[in-house]
Length: 186
Image (cartoon, rainbow, N blue to C red; front, side, top):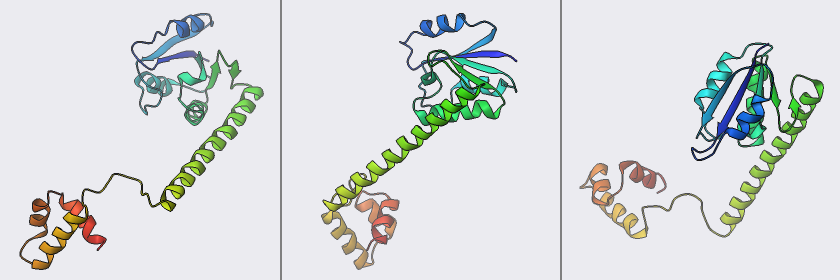
C-alpha cells in the first residue's frame, strides 16, 4: 500500500500551505500531487490525472478536504468512484472519512443519495422555470438575428427567384446556416 496526497487551489492567489501542513502530519505519504491555480470544475487537472493513472490496488489518496477533488457533491462522488475503481481508497482529513472501512462507504452512500437529490431538484426547478417563461410567451436562448423586417426581405428575395440562397444570406447579413434555419420554419 502506497499513500499519495493531493492538493489543489483554484486560483494562483490562493495559498496551499494549510493543505500541505495538514498532509505533512500524515505518516507515510510517498508523494504529494498538486494542481495550483486550477478550478475543480475542469475536466482535466494534470496532477490529478497523473495521480489517478498511478494508483494501484491497495493505495490510499489523502486530501485535506473533499472539495479539493471536486466542486460539487456529484464531482466528488465521481472522483471517489474513479479512485475505488482502481482498488484504492480515499482519506479526507477534515471530514474524517476513510473509504477503506464500512463507515466511510456508508457515508459515501449517503452523500450519493444527497447528490442525486440535489441534481433532481435542480432539473425540476429548471424545467419549472422554463415552463413558466414559456407560459408568459418568453423563449430561452439568444435573440434571433432575423427580425420581422429581415424576414420580409428574405421572403421577397426568394419569391423573385433571381438570387441564390448564398446571395440572400450575404445581402441580409446573416450566415447561410441561419438562413436555412429560418427557411425550415416557413
